[in-house]
Every structure is written in C-alpha cells, then in structure tokens.
Length: 261
Image (cartoon, rainbow, N blue to C red):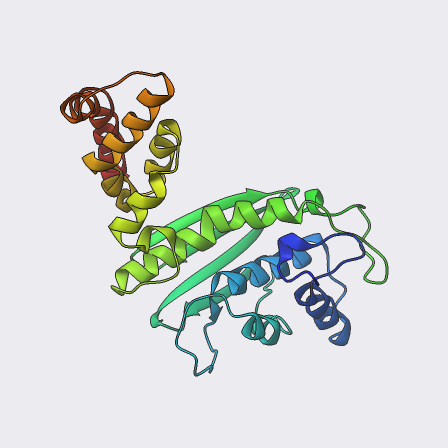
C-alpha cells in the first residue's frame, strides 16, 4: 500500500503529497531552504487534519480527512506563503468558513517558531529544529532524504492542528470526527476496556472526556474487574464507595485544572 500521510514517509517510499510539494518548488524555480520545506510540511499536515486554504472554493462542506482533496491542495502553497522574514498561511474548515486559523512561522536562530492564531478564540505555539527532519545538512532537490517525519506530524498535530480544529468546531457548535465528540455512552464503553491508570490519563486530555470519566457506573465495572483479578469479592455499594473516596477526588482535581486552563 502506498504511503498516504506525511508520517508514512520512508526513504524510497514518498507520499504523493511530498512529491507534490517538491514539484511545486521545482516548477517555480524556487531553491528552498530547510525552513521552506518544513513550512511546506506544515501545510500538508493542516490539510491532513481537514483544513483547507482560506481562499479554497471547494463545495464539500466537511472537515474530515479527504484524500482526494489532500492531493489536490498539496500541489501548491497558499499565495504569499513566504514573506521577507516570516511565513504565513491562512486556513479554514469548510464547515466553519467564517473562522480563520492563521499559521505564522519565524526563523529563530537555527529553530523555527510556529505560532497558530484563531482570532479572539485561541493561540498555540511550537518550536522545532528543521535540521532534525533532514538526513543531510545540504539541500538538493535532486537528491536528499527526510527523517523523523512521524515525530513532526505527531508533535504538530497534537500541539496545534488538532486543538485548533477542535476549538473552531466547538465554537461553531459543530461536530467533527474527534474522540471527545463521541456520545457519552460510547466513551464510557471504550473506557471500560482500559486500565484505571489509563482512564485517569485519558481524562487529562480534555474536559469532555474528563466529565465522561466521572460516570460512577464506569468505575464500578473497572473496580469489579480489578477485584476479580485479585480474587476479591466486593459488593456494588463497596465498589461505588471506593470510587468516591479514591478516584472521584482525582478526577475533580483534573477537571478543576482544565477549567483554569
């Protein structure tokens, strides 16, 4: 199966989106530096997350992953993407076209500072070292290799792309293909298969999941399972009481921290 996402890149197996980016530089006689290419990668990652360029005229009104749309839009970078001393790309979700998400990148010594702004709503930032993602310090479009693109993808999506998408969708009172937008009954059902420590870690990811994790019936099932592993029999009342004195306070602290943030 051919690689589809940026994180699938392996030497000798290049996703078509990366090939499109390199062709964009070549056909426009652009000799890119490392930052130019990394900014191009960020454009691909935003497209993978469901964003499109602000001036996009697509009729499709969804914000989910669409491979054909990804291929089309990865053939070019946004107009005025590179400025004198910075880069800027503006994106929207087709389901919320009135809210723009702006990505501004600035070289800081050998690093690249990435700032994401959703006007009057949220702001995110990330610092990366472009050299980390190249196998050589020399840039030659004819022969060079990339590395650690899975790290770049996970880092950027977790720090910027996914939080920005969730914030915009929540502001528009919409729903996207995100874990926290599953019905509470499904969230609880999924968490029933986790270890208690993993449920607590998952609760720290966002407020909606934390609220679902406070379902006492979930903890009765988890604690009942853990008790059976130790060959201990506890009544429903004992399990519920154990949740209230041991785990409910932890979840309340997590929820309070999220409210402050």
